[in-house]
Image 1 (cartoon, rainbow, N blue to C red):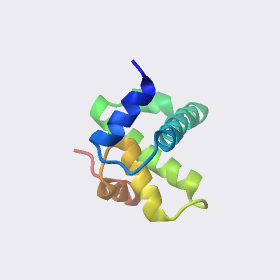
Image 2 (cartoon, helix red, strand yellow; image 1 turned 90 degrees about the vertical axis):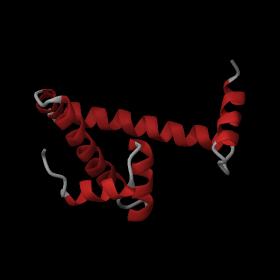
Image 3 (cartoon, one colour; image 1 turned 30 degrees about the vertical axis):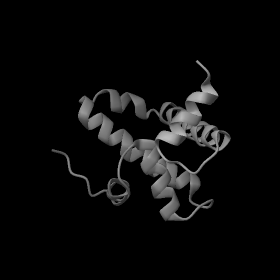
Image 4 (tube, rainbow, N blue to C red; image 1 turned 180 degrees about the horizontal axis):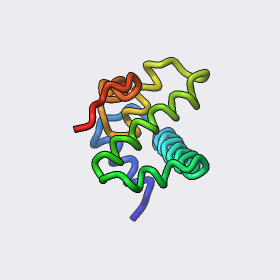
Length: 109
């Protein structure tokens, strides 16, 4: 299967105004950010605490940690709106959810 053809078809299917090369750059940015975040969790001993939580709570907490980490890491590079959109796309969630995570308004249920 030709990867370039698959990417071109994906762009067409989703009506994106982007070149395959730009899509690869975006994908690489997302993957690299997640690798850096996982390293941050390990380096700071956060993984051990996350593993003790139930799956649902762990995923919510990990998402909040990622949002905090991503915003701190990139706060001088971009404006908050573009950071919210990027985080939203990386985490497959709404910008409203990102905003709530930033404000720590989520509740444990």
